[in-house]
Image (cartoon, rainbow, N blue to C red; front, side, top):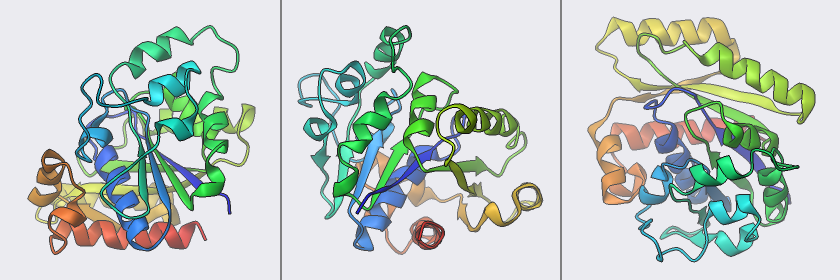
Length: 257
């Protein structure tokens, strides 16, 4: 067994990237897949969104240590409250680590090398990347088999996507030829507005079969869950948001068979 590695990225912030990463992992684990979530965003929202305190001293090691070469990935991994769902946590110090390694050799492949040490223990490894085209993002793309792109169904949603796809092409050309776009997920979809439908139609027109059939609705429960340190499925499994993430996870499983 070797894990399918998916990085979740969009250089635009606030598109539901971390929420998607956390809930995808939650439902993959529910479907009996052994899953690891790597928090590779210095904001560390995936870490706190799973109820883990990022304050100094609470975590024995983080992804900062992995990036700097001070710890191996297995030493960083911690289990969550959920069966088959592990987390490699991070803290804001990761941003400094990124600056520290900018001139080092192998700076682009550190995450890939780390992921390889645990790939045989998981079915899926999901990497939550920062909302920027940075060294961390490139590391994530080089370490992955697939890129998952959440796009908010709002005006300007597709701005910046072209640039991200360009970066992806560069990574494929120079470092990871087998990288694929897994799909584009429409998030914060509001069926009461014509704008949401318009943007979703644009996504479908541009990405064709790569657009996921499931859309993630604007949902209070989805917004509330991280402040309670739980995925939406654990917070309110009957909510629209939870049902949407569950359906979306099935699509991911289908596409990565």
